[in-house]
Image: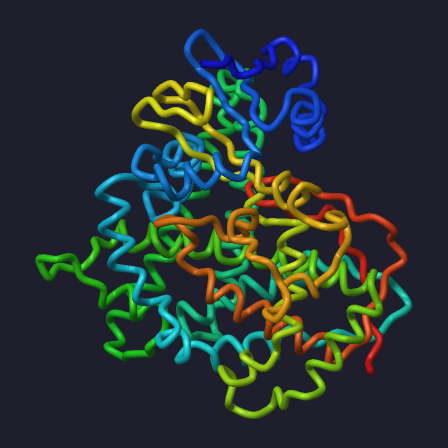
Length: 441
């Protein structure tokens, strides 16, 4: 067996400031120097294996998925803030709750949520034309959060509670990033009270959600929204989820549902603003569809070019830019031995820009996803992951993004003077600033 090239802990420590700010250039340099697989040692027995090899990624996510669990980055570090839900659990606990929750996100079930989603998007997307550039990310963050909130609760009178929940979610994400990228500071985060402070915020968020759930149950009114679907979900013995488990799942939907969608929307709008010829094609597609009628599902099927614009943006800027796993048994990939309990980071950002698999890989070309001429990219394209743990809300997210982009492109001609966007890799990939100007058509 071959030895995986090793990046010394000393080199990582020397580059700690750059890694804390943005680890992607450091990882890219290592990939270019050492090839598609390399390893970072983090202690006497700890190791992180980075891979951008498409066969290796497919093996971890699909072919050998039973050998791999979510790593402790999610099952322990993230879980302490948002609980043991789909995103942060493993084994039987994950399988049981996946089976319970999956039906809520089937396309037929989502049809009932489309009008709620559509109303929320139309309500949020009201921008006045100015000569200033807007940072689109906070706007898309508010939009995505409101869509998830209204799809869960079907209420318009809890804006204050939702604003507080969003504040807590953002604050805890910032703390988790510090913990992940500065593991040598773990002792300080504990004794300084930083972790304790953020765990207290998590308790506040749980109390807030519990109050909303109690109000729904006591009202004895069915809304046919996501909360109703979760309340009706049953284990095999016919029992419902415990209240703590229900809150865990709701917190996961808020955290994963709004953050990744807001990021993907922001990158898509920036790329459309930067590429006016693509934007014009998107406008032509939208112009052929009556967005004001109630045939929302049919409209979505007719917005194919808008869909391609989103798909291509998620290739260049995948929200899940790394997917983490840990093998529970020894595994092999090619000539490499993957010892048990290795943390494996799947470099989706690198794979999506690999010139070996994508022509003109750095260019924004939605045409490559045209159903009539696109190649089979399934081995090189993972915007929502793959395999049994593929994102449960992928259809929900795509519907939301297609609707939001369509409404904006139809109302406004968008532009930017920013040559290159600066990325900010947190739990998911977000832009530091996505500056855009809105001009009514």
